[in-house]
Length: 201
Image 1: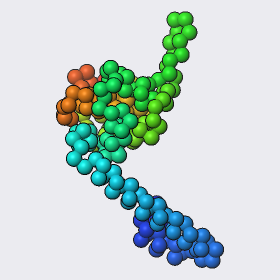
Image 2: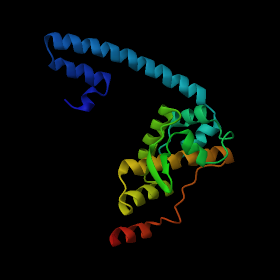
Image 3: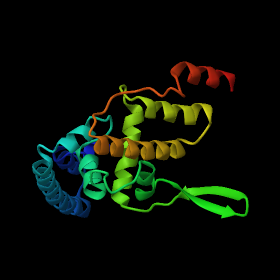
Image 4: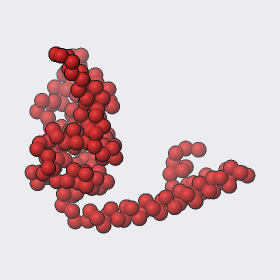
């Protein structure tokens, strides 16, 4: 039995036919609970659709590869249009995606991220960052991820958190300036430079 066998109600109903006795009864009880959860999720989806319908800010954010309606609406609900933040750097602190600082005399150490702010928004940003770096039409953020993982030999999780922070800052810039998303490449991290440095290392 694989994950796809439990992905839909139809597949789940077919899968439990393999069971017998108490196992079958318990599986049927679980399916009833799942059906109720599916109905509630559909209601939430419809409410969200009605809430964001015609919202220009949500539409602008959804133009970014990897950003869906859940992240766009959550971002606006938690951070607003960006007018209460002085600059893009403050967004990283507000979402908890900046590293902790441990300073002793002249020694400065960077620790794990602070995890301040809304945990659900932070999770959505990280999920969107994974989708963004896998998208074909991604620009400078994908290049940053490749540069950190392939040239700087950073871990994928560390790199994706950095991309998530930059993604949050990009969303802030779009909302505050009233601009639309445009795919751009990083002048500091060109594809040729990335390949040359990877071969040299």
